[in-house]
Image (cartoon, rainbow, N blue to C red; front, side, top):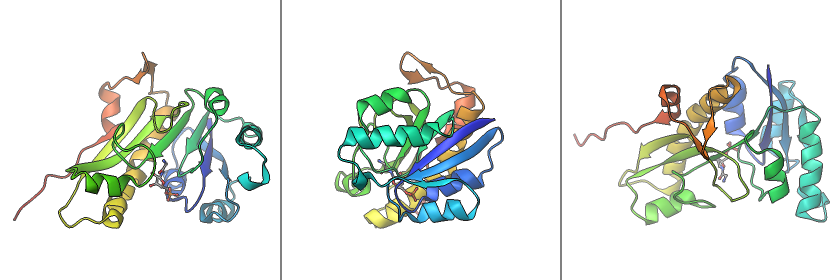
Length: 213
Ligand code: GAR
């Protein structure tokens, strides 16, 4: 059984999708939030999952917070740390500690649009596809070996909100599947990349063909 610790900062809908997927061979050991009022924390607690609030504002430095966060995570002996809308820049020491066993989901087709406001930026650039990426976390923000990607068509009348909503639905399919593959030992990093053999097909979600009826 693989122990999974999920880090959130807010609503936690990706965390919920992973919990509700009831992945074989995986146990959600804890959900930790840097914001005590995160809605996802209450959701996890109601389901009997260890729910831990660790307010980053209580720490003098990023290093201090990351050290406390690592201690809170390690108390649950994690095989995998899952960042699910965890909106914190992490120190290099923290990312090194969980190298090869920490995943993130980002709402763009990386390496396009790291950082914030991904959907606004995709629309501004006239992108025809948008999507989301699950990747291993490295010291560089929104970088690291790509595990899974899903794409949607950008529609002419899309707004950042409508695009975000469609991409979020895809996130909820993609992230549990990527975590399942990790827990099943199906993911190998070779030369800094995740090999995309036949098993990886379930982590590639292509857009529906556009119809112009
Ligand atoms: C998701 O769209 C996730 O991709 C994004 O925050 C949202 C969290 O929603 N993450 C990032 O932007 C990280 N760079 P959720 O709390 O409902 O899962």
